[in-house]
Structure formats: C-alpha cells, structure tokens
Length: 217
Ligand code: AMP
Image 1 (cartoon, rainbow, N blue to C red):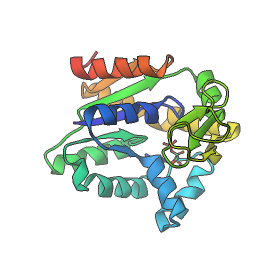
Image 2 (cartoon, rainbow, N blue to C red; image 1 turned 60 degrees about the vertical axis):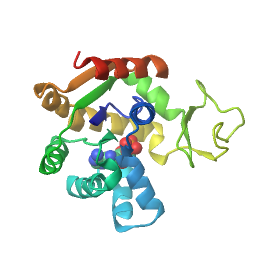
Image 3 (cartoon, rainbow, N blue to C red; image 1 turned 30 degrees about the vertical axis):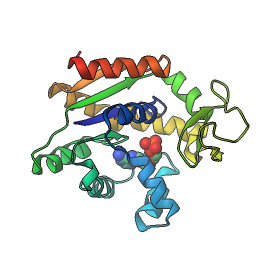
Image 4 (tube, protein in one colour; image 1 turned 90 degrees about the vertical axis):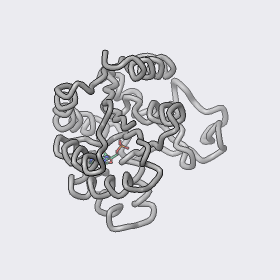
C-alpha cells in the first residue's frame, strides 16, 4: 500500500507517518529527512537543497523527484511505503504516479491533515527534534523530561534552522500556493482523506487508521 501524508509544515505528518509506518510495517519516506541527511553527508544534492531549505522554499522538482524515485526503487519499498513531505507540487505528484505505474503500482490514499494556521506557527516555532531518532518535542506543550535530551533514546535535541518564525511563515505560504493544488488532484481520483489535525496525536492517528480501514470518507 502506498500512502501519502499531506499537510502544512507542523501539521504532524512526520509523527503520523511514523505511527502508520509501525502499524502497517511499511517504510516511512520523508523527503525533508533525505535532504537533511544528504546535507550532513555534504553530497551535491544536500548542498544544493540547503540553499532552498534555508529560505523555506521548495527544492526544484527534478532534483527532488530523482532522489525519491531512487529511494522507492529500493527493495524495502516493494510492498509499499508512507510518503511524508512528498509530493509537494502537481508535477511531483504526476511523476510519482508515472514511476509507480511503470511497476504496475499506484497511490492508494492521500491523507490531508488539517490544522489552523496560528496553531502551525505555534507548533513549529516551539519544536525541537532528537538528532538521533527524530522524535519531536515542544518546549511548552510536550517538553522532554531532561532539558536538551530525548526521552526515548537520550539523543541530543536540536531546533531546525528553518523552524524560526520568519521561515516558518514562508514555508506555510509555500504550502498554500504550491501544495494545496494537489489536494484536488487526489480528490478527483477518489483517493483523498481529510482528517482533523487540531487534536491530540492519538486522536489524529485513530481517524487516519479508521479512514484507511473504512475507505474514503
Ligand atoms: P520538511 O522536513 O518536509 O518540512 O522539509 C524541509 C524542506 O526540505 C522544505 O522546506 C523544502 O525546502 C525541502 N523539501 C522537502 N520535501 C520537498 C519536496 N517534496 N519538494 C521540494 N522541496 C522539498
């Protein structure tokens, strides 16, 4: 099963993709994480992506699609995967369909996690992540037990450089300008599921899992 998580930055796509990935035993493919890893490794793709990520802009489609297609051609994606942060443009969505179509596969569901804008800014500007396992914390709503340390693995917590308030606002407007059009694309194909992301993590997960079990709402 191939599932896409859609939502503005801060909507909880990563958290929900992780839950689904465990529930369905499918890999979680996060384009932002792939770019951040490429940057840590100082690859050509990583250094190019940095220029866009720092400004909250999208990395060009050609680079992004190539990276994702290489990833989904790895054998552990053969039974399916959960996409998080990809596709983000209509062009990416179409190329993804073509790439899967060549293998006789297709996207099964696109899940749109809806969260009001003010809540997105609040969530992102207080967000800290574990460098090792990527578990997210919020300095006000869900702080770690020990300052700066991950409760789960003891890893160091850090704030993403693009989670500063100014960049956050740019990333949210990029979402509304460039990513929202793909909601119609999946809606027309009868694959879109809308869930309320303005509730606790468990509530969102339950909505997603029951929608996937029941079919389209
Ligand atoms: P994320 O971790 O999903 O918030 O992504 C962080 C940044 O990586 C974005 O602001 C973009 O600069 C870049 N990025 C991630 N996914 C994509 C994508 N599908 N298309 C273009 N740029 C992306």
